Image (cartoon, rainbow, N blue to C red; front, side, top):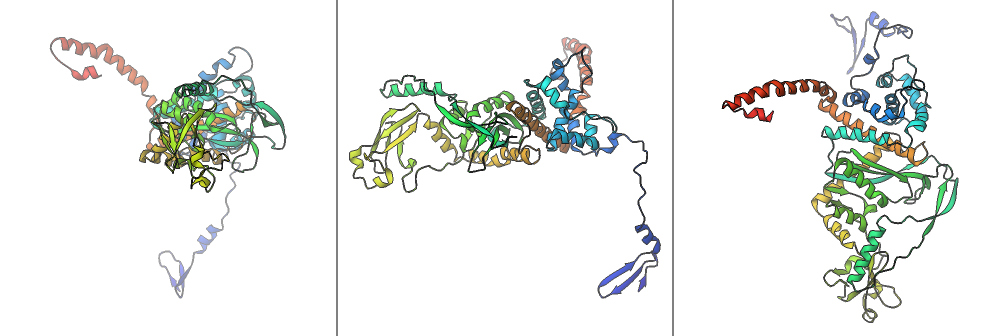
Length: 520
């Protein structure tokens, strides 16, 4: 046993282990009880209780939500009715829900009542009553339904990110994801509906007739045929569509067709039923991108968008497509289509046996048909791997816009396109992952396409706002601080224009030159 002369602590040595015994006073302190301060009255502001690095502080620092008043002022009466809930508060409540992935508005209001940071963000005191959870739904029905207010909020936040140089839309990534609808998959009716005509049908028919005339064929007459299909329509949410993809469990869902830049900022979104193919909405999403950030240099899309018309659209806009490899759909044991070489000059195909497949016709779907000589194919050693046709004829179909697909396939091997497509997993796929895991949109509790569009706009606006606030916080930039100096800049400009500039111009007439005055 040894005793520390300074602290009075006794140490006991046993082998290589040391045990010590504290003084009696220290032992009594360890066993002391915390005084109950739950009913203690303190003078403190709510601002002192919110951490300096809280996300909501960062957001409040980078954007002024007062722009919402201008968006909704025509939705409120100036001289009739009771005082309304502040519209900025209503929108901020939704931002709290989507920023922190709270599943419902009822739960959001419950969280706001007990969370000091949420109250601070809304501008409410510790004891002030929070609005009822039905307040927003009633305001949506009476004021916001059928308007573009939520799209304007999304656009405003994106414009702020662009203004601070955070958006890089040189390369754009477009894809879609499914969000489960609030609908029972067993409650539906089967309906026969008319198939929607392709948006580019008229352009395709025009190109088909030009191609037929170039080959000496008569133009096709327009035939009005009504094509129908059977669909399952949900009794709960008729706007949703049945999702049946990659052998997944069937359910009613919506598709969020989305575009983002290389930094992960969402540039545009369109909401449709889940049974609407990705390629149908491509042009609309691209138009949204061009409207907000201009024409990109390159677009990365997955295999669902790799069809002749979409690639033609991309090339016509002088944009570089970055597409993936798609394996041939030929049966096993048969020769692939790329083994037949297309001769563009003579407009024919050459088979591996150096025999020619000549042009026959162009059908209504826009495909040229090329056919071999059956007399030569009858005794061909590769016939079993080439065709199972009973008339010994090999047929190859080529779309009139197939050249755009081939050009995209050539560009796919370039280092630039490989690099752009490789970033899909870091950009658009990351956006969808965050949307579902962090912001509560793996499924929705709302019903109807219009409400889902509102929710999509606010969720992606919240994601852009979170990213912008975090990045500017790390850089130590406070945009709102610089805004306070704008009035001062105005005063300086008036002084320069009214007093200093006339003085320098008078001196200039006397032969003196002041080059920097012109720059000012």
